[in-house]
Every structure is written in structure tokens, then in C-alpha cells.
Image (cartoon, rainbow, N blue to C red; front, side):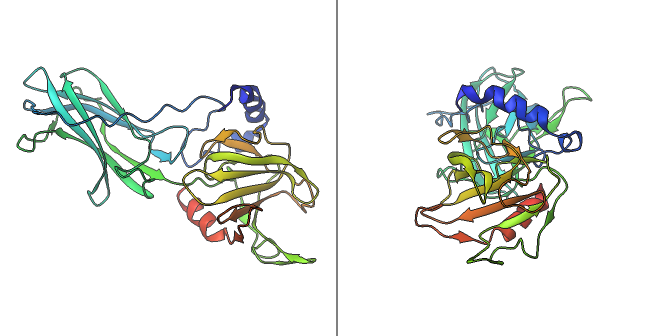
Amino acid sequence: MAGNIGIAFVVLLLAFSAAASAATTGGAATPGASPTAKGSPTGTPASAPSAGALSLVAAETTPHKSFYFGYRYPKLAFTIGSTQPENDLQIEVVNAAGEVVKTFYRENVAPNVPGKVRWDGTTNEGRPARNGRYSFRISPQSPTAAAPAARKATASTTLNLGFAFYGYAFPVLGPHEFNLGSGRFGAPRSGHTHQGQDVTAACGTPLAAARGGTVQYAGYEGNAGNYLVIDGRGTPVDFMYAHLAEPSPLHTGETVRTGQPIGIVGETGDAVGCHLHFEMWGAPGWYEGGSPFDPLPYLEKWDAYS
């Protein structure tokens, strides 16, 4: 992300109300302008893999909830014990059904030396992983070697390899209600129909990007007020947020992460009362030949796990 928005993000975060400051993006941190660490390289299998009798001395995954193209990718910090000084390991991300979605290969891993792996949320085929519960799994590369036994170094050592991973974050970070009357998608308007879903929340409630990507447009319009449009990374969908209290600190062309602060709820433009007007547009996109579709089923789904 361009460095010139750092100060703007700090100002935005300080402007959030005290009640809203306790809200989180589904448990994932949303720092202002800190860079996102890249996912770890997958590596390649050893030509003649070997490993001693392994034990898992320590393992901890953070954060407990992550988002695709978010600020904090799931990271496993681990330490193994072994009967030999060098060990060839494979570290897998597995879903709740035990299916492998991503594999990392590590050679010559020494015992009692901390290591780490960071997963960027893509599968072995390069696609975004599905929503759900996942876990890291550590094993020797050799198919004949035994999997490591869990062995805590101390009573306080953590052995935690599981986490939740989601493709989208709920955009309103505070108490809210869905407007199921005039704020529904398709509700009649003078000369047109409502193209989004209104989510009522107190003015000043923080807003976050439901899906990260590229800011397609940020500005002001008489009906929408302060608004911005984000081209969702890895999707054919554009996401539009309207009636922000102040101009978003983001600018056209900048990169935004899933769950990143994008502004605060307001009632600018033709809004009646404080709310977020949220739209989703199919390919080829927002006012590029695409069409809006009902976002409520998606918002309800994201809200359920946030």
C-alpha cells in the first residue's frame, strides 16, 4: 500500500468512537498502514528425505481467525525435537475433513530451533481456500517415518495448530441492523430501484473492507455522499460503500486488505439517518457493464462468523 496514507489511517483510527473501538473485524487485527508479511515459499521435496524420531515441542498458530488477502495471514510458529540433527519436514494446511489444501517443504530442520510458516490463504492449485476451520500438520517428508509425537517442553508451552479462515469480513464494526424495508435491494425509488442493502448503525461506527483488492474509485456524489468502490481481489465482484461520514483515507488505485479500516458510518448524500449503503456488482463490474445483485445473503453469512 502506498506509504502516503499512513497518517490518514492514524487520524481515522483515532476518530473512531469509544464504543466502536472495542469492535473487531471478526477477531482479525486491522492496523492502519502496516505492511502485510508475505506468505512463506512452499519449497521443494528433498531428493532423499530423512528425519529422526520426531516430537513436537511447541506449536502455536496466530491469529485464531484470518481473512483471505487480509492484514495477518495464519502463521505457525513451531519447534521440533528429534534424534538426529537435520530433518526433512513437510508442513501441511488441512481442512476440517483432513484434506490437504497446501503443502510446505522444509529441509535440514534442526531440533529445538524455532521455525515458522505463514500461509497466504491460497491452495496448492493457487485458488483462494474455502471458508472453514483449518489446521497445520507437521510430519516427516519420508512416507515411512513416524509422525511427530506431541511433547510439551513445559507446562505453559502451547500446542495449538488450529484456526479459522474466511474469504470475507463483515464491513460494519459495531452494533447494527439490516434495513428490511425501504433499505432492501430492489426497494422502489423515484425512477429506479434500490441497488444495495442498507445496514443501520450509529454515525461514527468503523467500517472495514469486506474484501480486499484495489480501490476502483473514491470520491463524493450527491446521492451516495462520500463513497468508495473496491475491486475484490480474486473475485469478479466490485464492492461499493456509500454515505461515509468523511472521505475515506483510501484513494483510487490503492491496495486495500480484507478487514482494513475504510471509513466510518455517516449520513452524507441523500441518506436518511446513519447507515452504510452496501452494493455488490457482478462482472465486468461497477458501471462497467456489470449489474448489482442482492448483497443481503452474503452480509448475513459474514455477520454470522464475525
